[in-house]
Amino acid sequence: MKLTICTSFYNVEKYMESFISQLKNQTCSDFVCILVDDGSTDKSYENCVMAIGRDKRFSVIRHEKNKGLGAGRITGLEQVQTEYLTFMDPDDEIEKTTVETLLNDIHNTNSDFITYDYFTKNEKNEVELISDNTKTVKELFESKSKLISHVWHKVYKKSLLEKIDFSFYKTVSFAEDLWLCTNCFLNAQNPVIIHNAYYYYKYNSTSLVHKRSEKSIRENIEVLKNLLQNPKLKEIKEIEAYIKDDSFHAFGHLIFPSKTNNFQLKPHFEEWRKLDSEIGIYIPEYLSGFVRKYVSFIRSKKDFFAKLMWLVLELKTRK
Image (cartoon, rainbow, N blue to C red; front, side, top):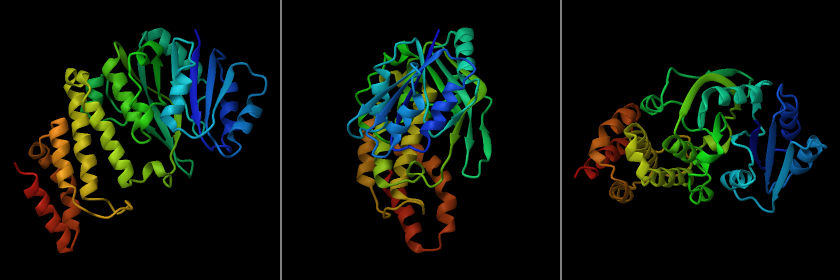
């Protein structure tokens, strides 16, 4: 059995050599790696090809222009020939025994979708294990686990991904991981959670990924709306509740942006009502949770305007 590693990259020239080296030095060589250069404008492609050398386990596909992470992953998926695959990003790190561990777990569980713990590694090289005590998918979503919404610490059976319509996935550049993982949880026949970590996610606090903008929040809402329109969602009430709650709070960020946001505070009540009618979020039902989340924020504000906006929100959302 072999494992396919799918990697889409864009302008990461300084990471390519070390990433390829990590894979070449694996304790198990039973893998192939499909790399997709998503229109890089630096020397990522050249560094990638040089690092690969004559190793036939690696193949590189090149997009003429940048299409986005989702589109890059789909290009890689279309080339997968093995029964199982995983995703990795070239600026992250993995254990030397990763491929060996994943193939053993596939053999032992016969799962079509495996979720693992993972490590985070910050700019100071401080490492933190991200883990919990969940044992089932329902427990993951009930506890709002941090293990839900990233694609790179999971293993997928190719037949599972073939059940999913990726047409929407190609169009988004924010929250695409949540979309893909949720669809996998909804469609998997035998999902398994293994509390063992092999992947090091290198966290960069200055990255655009961690900064909210109106564009990113709106796209996040579109992802959540798409998920809520999935008829399978009602089959697992814990996942439906998680996505509805996430939708509500994502929209809340448009009304009460945090100090890290770079857009102006402005009301979007009519849009919120439209969201309510489109996906069936009954606003008063979620208002109590919203209050709990933001009450400390409001109390900390001295200015009258913030408190006035809260009052308007409360009145506007009553039916």
